Image: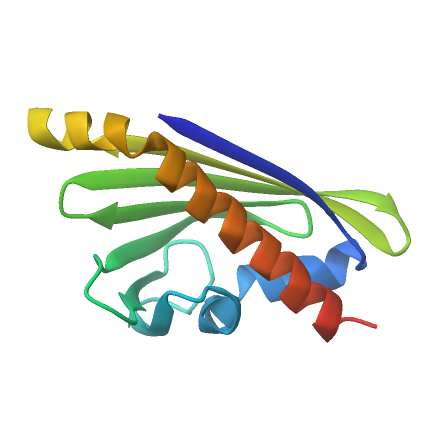
Length: 145
């Protein structure tokens, strides 16, 4: 299953990329994340691994930075019991102070039960993805000049 969100953000591409690629910012704009816990590597750099710890009883994801080509692209792999998510985020410069964020998530559910649950939850998953990206937009526009 795939989810794609596109937003235009009033911020310079390099500033936006720096904010987006720093996992320490995740709890500042992801309302369901309490904190991140570094596991290995230099946080946010290719090959680094960290845990996204939820505020409530939802599933903790382990994130691996697969590729980082700033200021234009970032790829992550998120793993949790029962699901893996490949995330590709692209930042396109529209003007000196405007950037388009294209966030694509591809979900792979593990096992027949998870696949059925995933199919039933498609709309909710897409809503959460959009909510996260809109929250990032609000956060970034408040952080950048």
